[in-house]
Image (cartoon, rainbow, N blue to C red; front, side, top):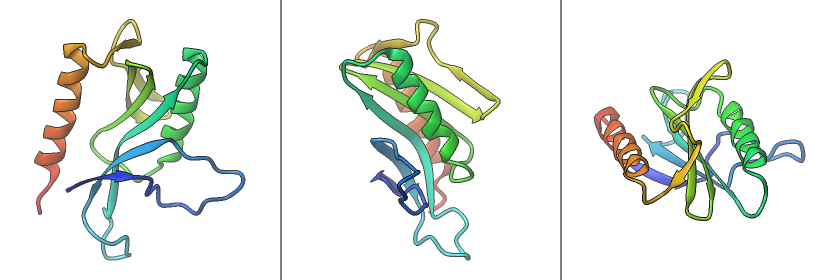
Length: 128
């Protein structure tokens, strides 16, 4: 089951900030017996008129904060208007931009295909 929201699994503090949205695959309550309660799939950060590099930098910061609350596939999505930058995250030392030009239109077929791939990945990983 996919769920939209901010369940990042950590207490809010003055030193910790959160992305605008997370897309999370949900398998029940976060308990010791349920090691995959909320699995973060996409970290979404929305920008306005700031520089693209500042928005990407914030997106990286939030990807690093996810820690172990993801498995298999994690995307960072930086949005400014109708333009999106997708980051495939493997670890803090291994990541890459999905598009050579970094930002593409959300109406670009490559962006739509990538969202479809993530949706299919979630369905395939859902054994409920």
